[in-house]
View 1 (cartoon, helix red, strand yellow):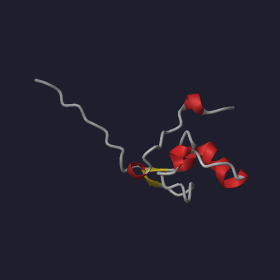
View 2 (view 1 turned 180 degrees about the horizontal axis):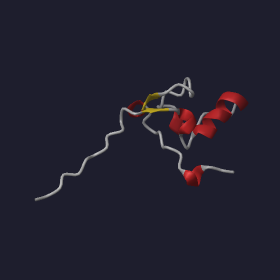
View 3 (view 1 turned 90 degrees about the vertical axis):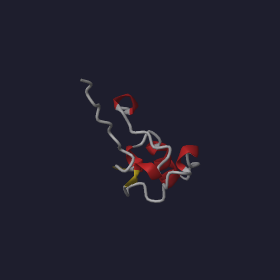
Length: 70
Protein backbone atom coordinates (compact mmCIF):
# COMPACT_ATOMS: atom_id res chain seq x y z
CA UNK A 1 0.00 0.00 0.00
CA UNK A 2 1.43 3.39 -1.03
CA UNK A 3 1.39 6.35 1.29
CA UNK A 4 -0.18 9.52 -0.02
CA UNK A 5 1.97 12.61 0.41
CA UNK A 6 0.29 15.76 1.59
CA UNK A 7 1.17 18.71 -0.60
CA UNK A 8 1.41 22.06 1.13
CA UNK A 9 -0.24 24.81 -0.90
CA UNK A 10 0.92 28.18 0.38
CA UNK A 11 -0.18 30.30 -2.60
CA UNK A 12 -2.87 31.98 -0.52
CA UNK A 13 -0.70 32.55 2.54
CA UNK A 14 -0.54 36.22 3.54
CA UNK A 15 3.00 37.62 3.08
CA UNK A 16 4.70 40.97 3.66
CA UNK A 17 7.18 42.74 1.37
CA UNK A 18 9.32 43.37 4.43
CA UNK A 19 9.85 39.59 4.78
CA UNK A 20 11.05 39.19 1.18
CA UNK A 21 14.67 39.00 0.03
CA UNK A 22 13.98 42.16 -1.98
CA UNK A 23 12.56 43.97 1.07
CA UNK A 24 15.69 46.01 1.75
CA UNK A 25 15.73 47.30 -1.83
CA UNK A 26 12.07 48.25 -1.51
CA UNK A 27 12.80 49.97 1.80
CA UNK A 28 15.59 51.99 0.14
CA UNK A 29 13.16 52.96 -2.63
CA UNK A 30 10.56 54.17 -0.14
CA UNK A 31 12.88 56.00 2.25
CA UNK A 32 16.00 57.00 0.31
CA UNK A 33 14.57 57.72 -3.14
CA UNK A 34 16.53 54.83 -4.70
CA UNK A 35 15.24 52.93 -7.78
CA UNK A 36 12.59 50.32 -7.03
CA UNK A 37 13.92 46.76 -7.45
CA UNK A 38 12.85 45.30 -10.81
CA UNK A 39 11.26 42.30 -9.09
CA UNK A 40 9.00 44.54 -6.99
CA UNK A 41 7.12 46.10 -9.92
CA UNK A 42 4.63 43.21 -10.19
CA UNK A 43 4.31 42.36 -6.50
CA UNK A 44 1.92 45.08 -5.30
CA UNK A 45 4.53 46.95 -3.21
CA UNK A 46 2.26 49.94 -2.59
CA UNK A 47 2.10 49.24 1.13
CA UNK A 48 4.96 46.86 2.04
CA UNK A 49 3.74 46.51 5.61
CA UNK A 50 0.35 45.25 4.44
CA UNK A 51 -0.04 41.53 3.91
CA UNK A 52 -1.16 40.27 0.51
CA UNK A 53 -1.71 36.74 -0.73
CA UNK A 54 1.51 35.16 -1.96
CA UNK A 55 -0.08 34.37 -5.32
CA UNK A 56 -0.37 38.13 -5.99
CA UNK A 57 3.30 38.77 -5.18
CA UNK A 58 4.78 36.86 -8.10
CA UNK A 59 8.46 37.48 -7.27
CA UNK A 60 8.16 37.07 -3.50
CA UNK A 61 10.98 34.98 -2.02
CA UNK A 62 10.89 34.43 1.70
CA UNK A 63 13.99 35.50 3.55
CA UNK A 64 15.99 32.64 5.02
CA UNK A 65 18.81 32.63 7.56
CA UNK A 66 21.37 33.03 4.75
CA UNK A 67 19.82 36.39 3.78
CA UNK A 68 19.92 37.94 7.25
CA UNK A 69 22.87 40.29 7.82
CA UNK A 70 23.87 40.79 11.43
